Image (cartoon, rainbow, N blue to C red; front, side):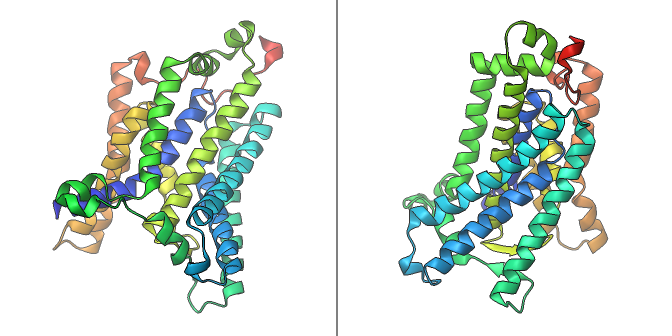
Length: 329
């Protein structure tokens, strides 16, 4: 049961890891993108649309489907959809200097509305009696495990029984941490988030860095939405079934202290906290609902502690949420 609980926590935490890593990359450039929930939603539905079209082109026959295409088509669609959302956010906040908080919230509303519209359209096309669409054939390719996992007992189940997007999420977080802390590009990006005027005076293209960081962060977050549908939901899309994963990803950024490496552990902790209510027997529904608040309660506690300690390395970028006006330099 312990191994099962941990594996379930990892499965729940991977979408949060994608979302938080993407948001950390964005926030390091000085932009607070509260549109991450909508971006993850669009990434998920874009991947669903791509896989739906591919499955139908193969007459819904898994024998005619190519494993590589079944994975790469939804993945590219998810990235494309989320990058477009990121570009919209950048155009409004970087180019037009719109308020970042309002733009992000509007983007979340737009993303959820667009996702529900496309999801309902696909459900109508299939004439499904249930308010959902099942892409189990594509999901089976995403859920492929390492062949030797079953031979290693509990060790194989714990470390080698996950889908490839789980390992990709950890790799993306580690690579992001290395780039941010060990490379010139990462140094420039952090300087843009801390003091864009100084970075601009040093010859760093602030607009380019903010565009690129936001689009890369959006792409990473969008993959998290696709992972949720294909792995956690086993390829079943239902409107509004995504829950508060996007908001939890934003909360995880604070919990991880804006460090992608910390987000790896934090995402699995959040996954365990979200999963705890399913393993607590004998409590009423109301009490189980209270356990769903645990990730947010823990985030608030971490925020209070880090604010009291006032260590600079535990604080967000100095210019986070502030637009840069070059003429005021």
